[in-house]
Length: 134
Ligand SMILES: [Zn+2]
Image 1: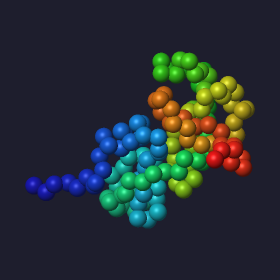
Image 2 (image 1 turned 90 degrees about the horizontal axis):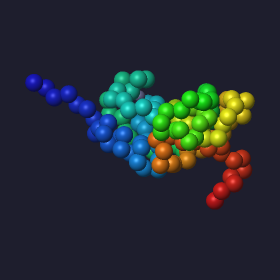
Image 3 (image 1 turned 120 degrees about the vertical axis):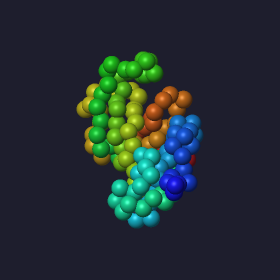
């Protein structure tokens, strides 16, 4: 019975890295496709040997909605924005932004930056133009 190759990565290791380290992890295919979702096969070219890679920590909002009814984990943060972000360099992730009370505070294309937190999920904050940091 032939063993199915599952590649060099495991979903356990990926989840650990995604949630407990201060970086966003994803996978890069030889064809250039980048995804933040754990996959075994490249959806673009079909190869199996995707390479785990660090994703960019900045990107642009592509979709968002304000949550006023939080889950228990976010009781002290509501309302907040649930956001979809296209990362610079590839990969699309879902996350959240604290302190957003109206959808009019955000716009598609707004620059955001990953901000690691002890809270669950992927927190983004506004990325200040012209740096603003070291
Ligand atoms: Zn590919």
